[in-house]
Length: 430
Image (cartoon, rainbow, N blue to C red; front, side):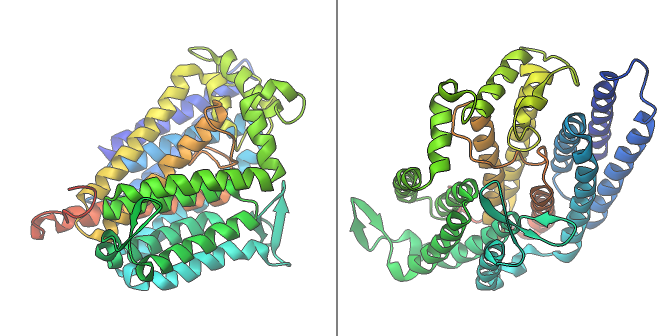
């Protein structure tokens, strides 16, 4: 099944590549066949790696990612040829990281005992951009580090590491965090001795992200924390408390940061200042409207006038050239991926693996909601990328690591089923 789906993803990607190229020439591009061979070769190699290292893994995860990554590459190549070469290198790096993760982590459960080391590692990764020598500030955010020929965002990898820390700590303290010992603002809360270390670690991570002006990642990580608390304890109080903190934090961020005020203003009324702060949102709205039901056709639209179209706004480019049908197809792929990820979490018998899979899936799913909501004006823009689709090396490699972890957990869960009577009923409401 996986191989068939991968071949289909490869053929669709190649067809899209050819159609985009035909928009600028009258004959068939000569590089279509080599491109098809390269795509099928990479996908075939990835399939062999998965079937050799994790033969019982969920078969739909890799094909869905292959299709999303392929369509994203076609759009990037059509919008900026210089970025296309870099994205191909990052895709190869992502596949290498994917295979390396499968080889290095044969049993994800072993990471649970290193939860505090994971917390320190994740925090260190977040702090790297603040160092005076290697830290780089781009477009007002200090979230990059320079490694000579290229820059990376260590925060993308920090989110993966900190997810594992959260899972490890919650597995260890789940029962204590479920028991209420006092009442604060109408909510029953656990003993601070048990919640304090977790809250401190999350607060430090959030403060570092805010100091770096990476408010989009701050939102994602805070949401991840709330979701994982609920998955581990099934207590609605954590969700309500998290919502209250989010509202308070939003007000504070609006008062403290000018760029937050500009983004909120552009969200509420982009046409009030259409030549400045509202230009990006307005152009995205025009692009989506031009696309209509079936789109203008690959290479036939003008999404390149949208600022940051290969990163924050790539969904607007898809909506213009592939229309509502194409944009909906992308969203369906993400829905299937999130569904498969949560299915992996439900099947996993080990509590740590269950929380890791659920947390990482929720992280990617909420990231899609945030960026698509920003493009369609359901939410203010936050500056995060569309997973596997947008241009960006660090996010792409980190997402391939997440894919490898989900595949490893799904394989381990199926392998252990004959000797495990049932999954732990204390997680995910079972």
